[in-house]
Image (cartoon, rainbow, N blue to C red; front, top):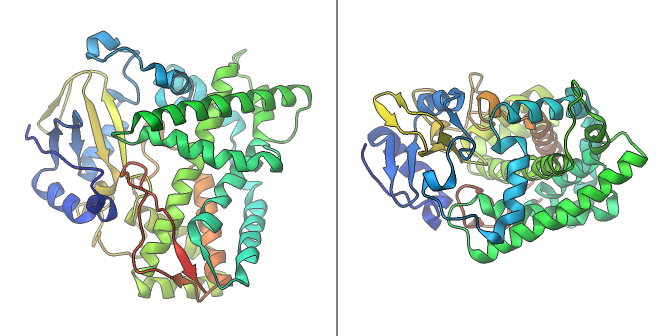
Length: 408
């Protein structure tokens, strides 16, 4: 296997990874990166196959010990973060994953998501009301961030006065999903897990005494064949819902608007659809925006047993990096992949994953993105970027923006 080092956190790559990804996808679609100690895959078919392959998983320590993997002892700085990881469904494999996901799905139902439609629309209108007379806003801080945090808070049943706590906790926690995080970030993330966990435990106790129509009440009650979520599992999966439930939506909103701004013909198409109240258009448009500039561009998997894919041998205990951002621009799968085409019909992008770890929050993220984009363009048809250059937060794995000033 050929080797190559991909400087994932280089500012130029974070700003626009697609030219280098296109070059690698054609000439070096699979490579081993010694610096990151991972095997990178860049083509859609390879990524799709690996996501569906049960010989790969999100965790490895249920198969091999830390000693067998050659890992150092657990970092005491991230003790609480590690316990959080052990108890949520994303970083577990069957049978634990099957059990946790099954219990979560009994509470996180399509009906519960659909019941939020009116609330999401109301929140969006309220955010625009606050900014409308100012003639401008930060699309990130004033629009993209408050919406999913408010929705998740509403879903969980977090009282309004406590909601400002959620975004800072989540922002600190997700730093540990970046590659090359600092010791200071590790301490901050661990402390955020402690504070968030304590808060959810108190809320869960209240819901045990006085159940409500919220998700935490449902998770406290949910049971299948005598099996219930433990206290740690309930806490971990609520934290996961906030982290996963808003990072993709925040980054998807700002990346989507940036993509429209750089493709004026498609922006005009979207404005026309918004003016006509064409909600079906935005269902298709959001899928294309999620493909075109993937809000969470890379996910990792562990090799649980030796396997071969297209002549590439992978050994048990290796880690692979699946470059969603590259797969979503693969010309073998998507005609004219570098063109934003809001009416693209065949659009089986990788953004929400595939296989058993497919994102259970995808329907909610789609609903939020469709509603927020359509309403923004309908109520503020003159909205446009108020800066020549948009800055990124620094990392590729959680590829977000520092700010996005717009005027209207």
